[in-house]
Amino acid sequence: MNKAEVLKEIIEQRRSIFPKDYTEAQISQEIIDEILHSATLAPNHKRTKPWRFKIFKGEEKAKLASEMQAIYKASQPEQLFLEKKYTDIGFKINKADAVVSIVVNFSGMVPQWEEIAAVSMAVQNMYLTCTANNIGCYWSSPKIVEQLKDSLTIEENQQCLGLFYMGNLE
Image 1 (cartoon, rainbow, N blue to C red):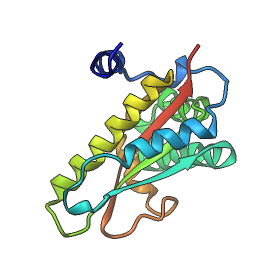
Image 2 (cartoon, rainbow, N blue to C red):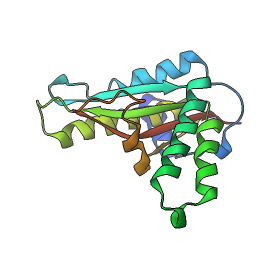
Image 3 (cartoon, one colour):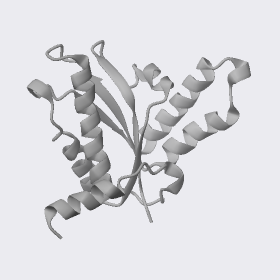
Image 4 (tube, one colour):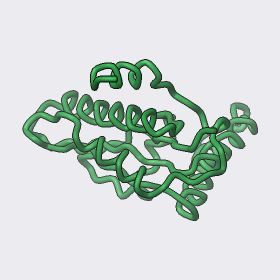
């Protein structure tokens, strides 16, 4: 197969695959590094490299799950609180082998939409690299990520655009 055919196949196979379908097998650090490296190859105007990623694994990931559940519980009026949603937040994070926070850094050098677009292209590169390595993944952007400012050490000129879940597939 030539490069164009390989690329076409990877693009056609790219899907959001949710944590319920991930295995317990760990993703090697080498593959995680490859996924993040591919993200940094995304085009970005004036080379602002507006993406900021933080990887959560192990204890940090469990802490993230607890924090997200606490944020959900605290932000919902009692009559709107759903136990299933609360449980699902923890399940998805804990079932994934790795969770990556997706943060945009607004440089002020270009319009904000361009930096969001660059981060989105970086995430697409992550999706394609996951697909090529048989890693399930998906980008989730629940409203409660806006309240992760402190744990993600998000600065005034930054915004969390969501979480990228990854896990091995059969």
